[in-house]
Length: 87
Image (cartoon, rainbow, N blue to C red; front, side, top):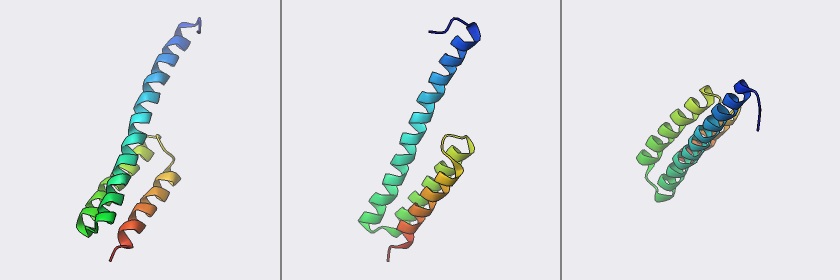
């Protein structure tokens, strides 16, 4: 454990951020799963709505620095490819 007051505070704030970031990453996975479920069900409208929601969440996570912007772009591309691959 640190002895310096500012370092103790830094440890506390880093832990809060870690928990928040983990929750957001988990939420991103949930949104992508919703897209996959809609694609598997064959519902194109629901899949597109789910993809739009997932893209919005991915953009927000990237803008806050939770995931890298290139990773967000890659995931958005993959989600949209799933939807576009439906007939």
